[in-house]
Structure formats: structure tokens, C-alpha cells
Picture 1 (tube, rainbow, N blue to C red):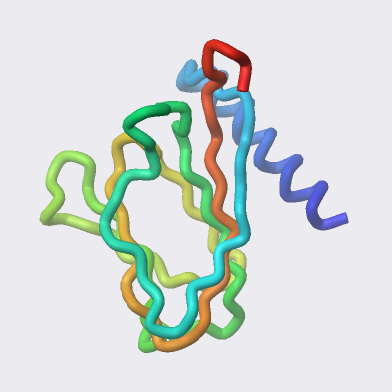
Picture 2 (picture 1 turned 90 degrees about the horizontal axis):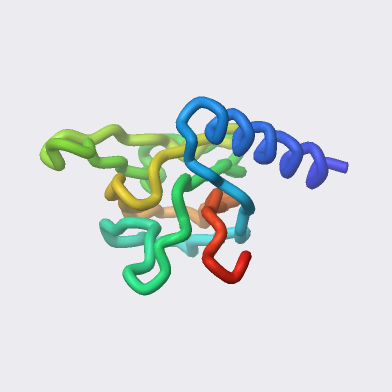
Length: 129
């Protein structure tokens, strides 16, 4: 099943990041995101101030035949100079990951409905959640 393949690949990524960067990632939370036409998300971090468990944001886009003129671009700001950024067109199959606690990003308005599977590799809190 496709779901099992996806979560298996995410777990492989988790193990790789733990091995290479010693991040102590333990679990993954995810949701299916639907942005309506004219939908957007203002610049933000994917980290809560009260609970700093999200470490790596993972986004998989599910939009077939997406054109740049539709908008809905993910804008990822440079960690050290937020005047610099990279834009990601949300084409189906595009996978993006970045530090949830350090990398500001936003979703620019789109003219069409836009779909993604967004998740976060997380550290465990003191209670093991």
C-alpha cells in the first residue's frame, strides 16, 4: 500500500538524520493539507513556542500539472539572510524538508486548489510523546 511505502521512506529519512546529525528524532506527525483557491499561509516557523519538539518539516506535493502561474509557491527563507529565499513550485512528487525550528517559510496565494502531505519529524518530550 502506498501509505506504508511513504511512512517507510520517512522512517528511513529519520534514521539517516539521526545517524548523520544526531538529532534524536523519534516520531512523525502528519496531515493532509488542502489550500483553497486564494489560500496562503503567512511566513512562520513550524515550531510551537510552548512545545519545541518538531525538528524537520517534510512536505510532499500532490498537484499534477501545476504551473508556476497558478501560484501556491512555497517560499523558503535563507537561515542567515532572510532577504534571500528559494521558491518551490508545488508539483506532484516534489519532496522538501528543512529544519522546523530554524527555517522561516510561507505559502504564497494560489489561484487553484492545492494539495500536500505535510509532516514533522519530532523529538520525544519527557513523557515520551
